[in-house]
Amino acid sequence: MKIGIPRALLYPIYIPLWKTFFEELGHQVVLSGRTSKGILNNGVKTCVDDACLPVKLFHGHVMDLIGKADVILVPRLISIYPGEFICPKFIGLPEMIKNSVSGSPKLLIMNFNARDRLEKGYDGMRQLGRELGASNTNVERALDRARARQAEYESMLESGFSPKSILEKRNARQSPASVKGRIGLIGHPYLVYDDYINMNIVEKLAARGYEAIFPENVPLEDIELACSRYPKKLFWSYGKRLLGGGLTMLEKRKVDGLIILTSFGCGIDAFIDELLLRANQREYRIPQTTITLDEHTGQAGFDTRLEAFIDMMEWRGRYDNNIPAYGTDVYTGKSLV
Ligand code: SF4
Image 1 (cartoon, rainbow, N blue to C red):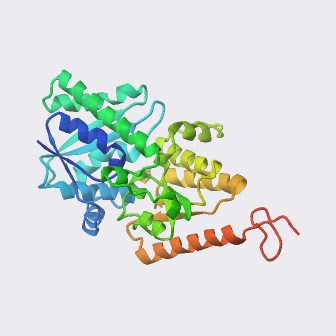
Image 2: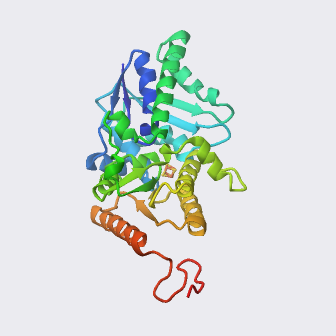
Image 3: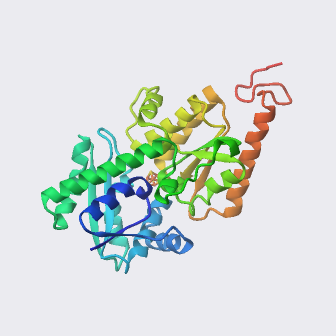
């Protein structure tokens, strides 16, 4: 059977797990095309207006698979770590697709809910494997291989590779000799790893001599440690990764600047960006900017903001003593002369 997987939402994080699982069960995996104007326009036309850009884009990728696959995988990610949750939009995704996309082949809905125990999260995959006609033994064997492949992938991400460099089997990292500096690119995987949506930001940074570092490059223990400064546990898994990833980059002085890529209307990002900005202003004072993306974001405006940020960052690197012409600290306003 040809199983279609939309190249959207958490595809760049979980594709080794999903693809290996289905292939081990004897199915063929077909991916939707890379994000394009056509895919984006289809998603925007089909999805309800008030959804965020990544969810609209998921609709476009599902439509791209119509006619290419016998069934389409729609993961329903509820919780990926015990005691934590994923954005509620992921929970309602299968229903949104069913009600908005017409002419789609059967949807394969795969639940993942590890709220109580991580192991329990995989029950949704086990159930789906059995629904596809595999025996318990074959499902367990496929799952073991898929999890091993996923663990290998995640350890490569933590060692500094990007999903693109691993999935496309090319070393996209610049050698340190050619790098002027490093910029932390903080955002959900579906923004920072989708070159169409983020307007090729990684290449644009590389053209100016900067290597991008991503939240997935930060080990989970460091993320937990960085977030332990807050009195309350962060229960959004990706919010925690973005905040903890950014804080770790700042704390370890791994970056010369931080760029937050956020989707217009994302409630989780609204909090996370603010917490990161406050911590940065208070403790680290490293240049930081936020770029908000939606379906109306234009290339020219995006490039101008990026260029301005890099210019400002380099200017600060050369001249910054936190004393503007009138002699007060730029953050506290206290006199420094
Ligand atoms: S976390 Fe934000 S960007 Fe991601 S699906 Fe939810 S609302 Fe959309």
